[in-house]
Length: 307
Image (cartoon, rainbow, N blue to C red; front, side, top):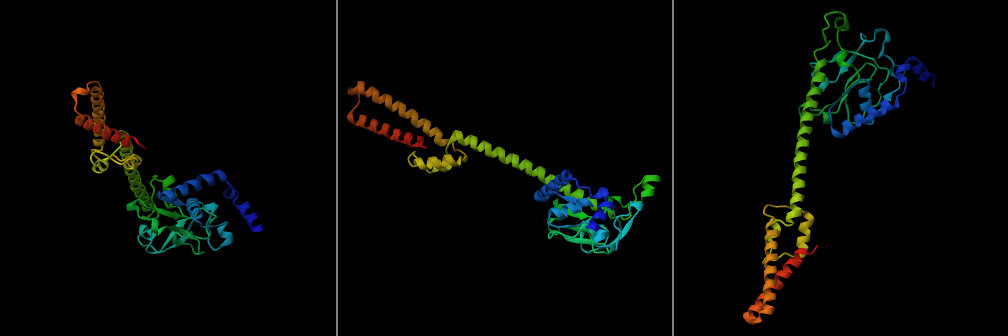
């Protein structure tokens, strides 16, 4: 408790809890993780990513580890400490295979337990992880990038020259801008993929909506038409096709045939009615044939109307 109180006194502004900020940032990190959105976490950002993935933090690095100064308020931007780089990692590639770097440091907390999904890329002499990445979520050419850096590569510059000289940003290392360049590349590729997916989804929705709209008018499909036997379909076949809402090409044939059958039925009924009043003009065989046709058409339409 005494050590904790001392940390709270020494790092008053850094230990103040902001639950709203924490909630917003954690929500954003988890959204990026769930959607595969490229993410570069620097300083606090790297700590948020590690915690979101199941890792933990040191409450105060210098108190719990010791040996390396991670925060020098009297030489804020000018302070540097050494990190050792793991070869074969993106960090080593960005910095041309360098084994060590002198990096800036503005923090009193840091990664304690690195989340299982991550691989460490650099450490300080006291064993603190200063850089990590997810090997399964890193390929800028495919829009994949998940990296955490405790140091600030964008601020590894000649501060005096930038502020009081010609204003140019001269980086300590040529690899500093490469960190961000790869991130921007990944973000651009990811965005193009999202745009393409949105267009494809919009087209799919259009096709689907059109399909069901046409289905409501056509009712049946080519498949249904091919299953017709002597112009009829079983009622349960019609019902299944209605449920599917399919609209295979030429699916309106059955609807057209149905209209023709209904027209024929109407004509047949008129003839029957005429025959009732002019019985002498039609033979018994003709009347029987006409009645058979009427019965057949009535059966077709009754089956087609069943749900």
